[in-house]
View 1 (cartoon, helix red, strand yellow):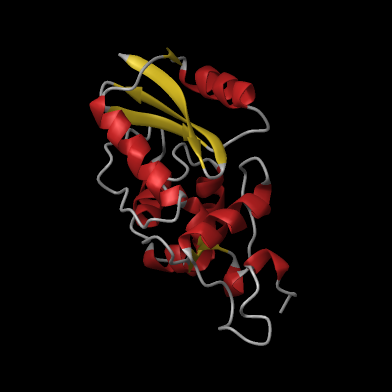
View 2 (cartoon, one colour):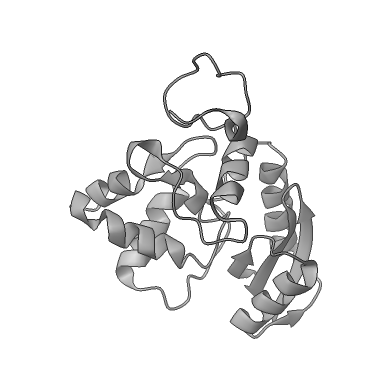
Length: 187
């Protein structure tokens, strides 16, 4: 059975779609719950339904992570759909980044043989079918810059997710180190 549902998180109403006990899509909050549901349903062809036990467990883990409790989501069964092999490898590497840690697009590209692939890594993550489970928000631009986030709210959403996880961004604490990341002056 294919279905989807919305669930409340610290970020707002997120969505998850599944086939059987496998996640086929996730969605960060859009401007409204209705928009999130419409986009998730249109992308997957699924209808609203109550989640089976494995999907309920995935929802609970995602919700806990977005409430600030470190959770490893790598055990959630996922189907990346029609992702090309390069993108699938990028997603696998992103899934290995622990909560609260970050890497750069270049770091992933270097792991994949060639730092010049950084732009392709960014493009693959921009098409990520499973945000949160494939934590593309943990991947930063060169020198730890917050760039490129295709979810509603853009880089501000990425920053909020990293703050929830307690990620350190940029150099260590300085004069403004006790301020929330969104309030710190640029480096």
